[in-house]
Image (cartoon, rainbow, N blue to C red; front, side, top):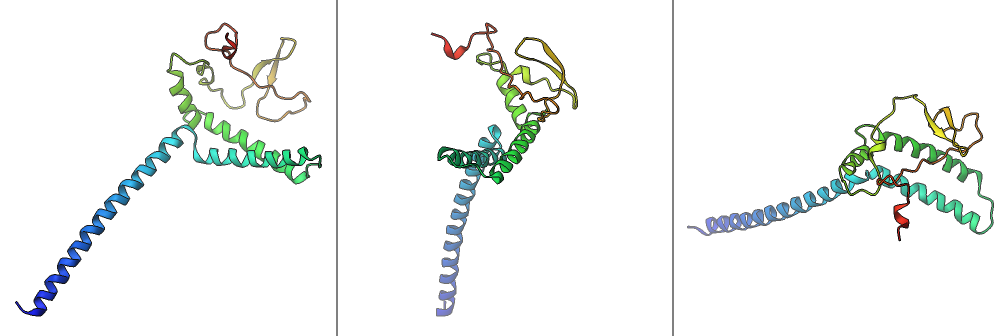
Length: 179
């Protein structure tokens, strides 16, 4: 063999070694990226990323409002307007994620299968038809017909009430206050 042939064989050997090293690196990178993507998918199966980021932003604006109030300064109107926008958008996101097949609906269905739940998650699995109204009780115990829970107060000056679920045991006692 001539010197040039030896040199060519040496260069090809170096290239082959470099190619094997690159192949191992790419395999390692692919495995790590696959692991990272799996972690992201697992996290999003419970709380979607867009929801998590939105709630963080909402909390940040609320905290800004609180800072003004804490030092006794009037909260600027633009912060109130932003909180109003965030409130409406939050309601829209919750409606979307709680509809049949939405992210929270899927989690709730999975949770409803657990017989050891403290709370009854099946009560929220029944979805109402759009524009349908439902009864709700006021302080006196009577039901108000036609109350729309679309998020607006309409003609009523009464604020919306939060409906709390009953403990799964049906006893009416608060399971967090057991002694």
